[in-house]
Length: 168
Image (cartoon, rainbow, N blue to C red; front, side, top):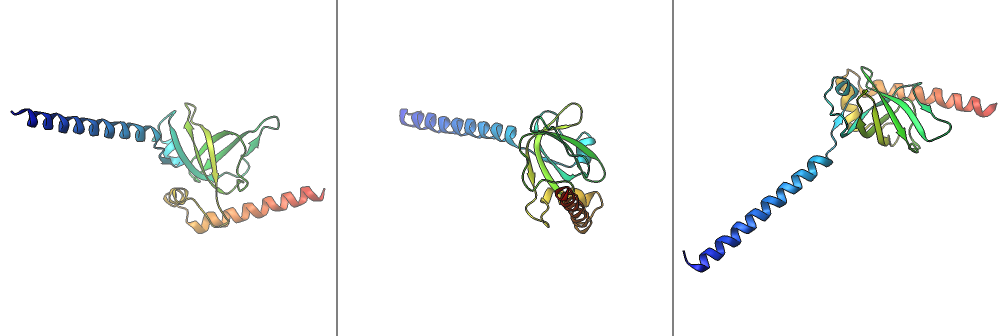
């Protein structure tokens, strides 16, 4: 082999190996940053990985929101009306968060079957439902009209309670 061909071969091998390293590092970084969506049914069935960031979604079960008056700790239940998952969150909840509404929670599933949330995402308006939550609820046998009607009913009941509390 001539010296010039050897030099070209080494350059090509070097570029191929650098490209392989770059692709490998990119795939490794993506693997650790991907957070897949799981419904409460999938979480209770054991499909969700423990202590790895995931997204879970469903409806906030009515009557399950418990706020610690001394801190920003909040415990609530996310349901797809088949199974429930307890969520523990420390922070300020979105303004649109309330019982009976759809949420997506980003966090880590813990050994006890509860989710330690890093982020809580609430709906945008009365008719919005995150696509993953809507699909999970449809798989559980609920149509969009069912959970929109239920959300409206819960919203009216909560507004009536708030109006009654303000009157006192």
